[in-house]
Image (spheres, helix red, strand yellow):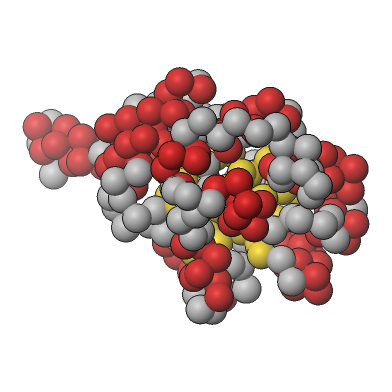
Length: 257
């Protein structure tokens, strides 16, 4: 089976930089995959991406040396298994609040006896190469999202789940659950303190920690804090950055600059 490049990077002591797709489209995924990221995540939770679109995007990303990850809509075995069968090398699962939910998530990602994933890697076995069945349990990554007050309170039991590879922090929901605003790249001391709690819990058991950001500067800050994976923005934000060019031209036409 083709090795998971993210595991190789971590073994070398390097952090992983992750791109993110909120919008559907094979060509868009191909562009993002070619930008130079280590991994690219297809977001089927908050993104506008359905199953058939996800498959087409995974196919488009295959031409680039990126690790394909899918954020599933929920902790649903059907969604998780279909994403893996389509060729995802990692799953990010939202709203994990306790050990039982983490165990259910990991179990859906692993073949027996480690879990209860149903066998039928239709596309995955083709693109990953020979050895998919015996090696998939070790190569595919499982990231549980801690983004609620309950999840934070139960962080020690969640990170101790056998087979869990890492925690991915959803800053907006985590902030909301503690009475804050859903701001990205926040410097709110209470939120950064929650990050430190999660980081420490992960390091105690030797699993990885990822976080969602919207800027290079904040990603650098998170790597300095000890994060192993940072998402440096997303397709929609990159596309919307064109507003600055539109404004510059509008100001020029209106005689303002």
